[in-house]
Length: 158
Image (cartoon, rainbow, N blue to C red; front, side, top):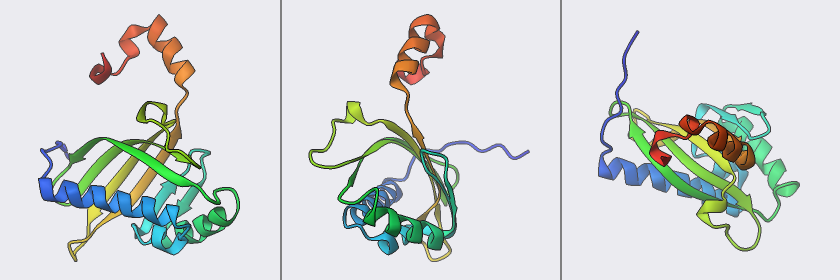
């Protein structure tokens, strides 16, 4: 088994990765499925908060273009980066809190989804999203768990 260790993020790479995630959010806000899909690797995996699994850039782009014309019409993405960790020079994990919204952007404390991006640097030096996981937070269940079992509170939040 190979042991991977998170390393201190290179400032330039971190900024480039955060700009990639912002570019995806801008494409979403522009209702641009192709632009959104372009932020992903050709073989990316994408798991929605309802559990739908999309495979590949083309699938992600096509499905989102339909979603942008129907259920997600007029929405924007709000995201807050929680942490960025590097696993070698060409792979990083970015954990965020996020949400889809219309109108006024929700406060960071109100973002209802926990998201994980796996980003990779290709042979051309470009960072792209290789995998995305989106999970709806159940804040009431978290509070109940934390009240009755305080050791379940993540160490970073204690």
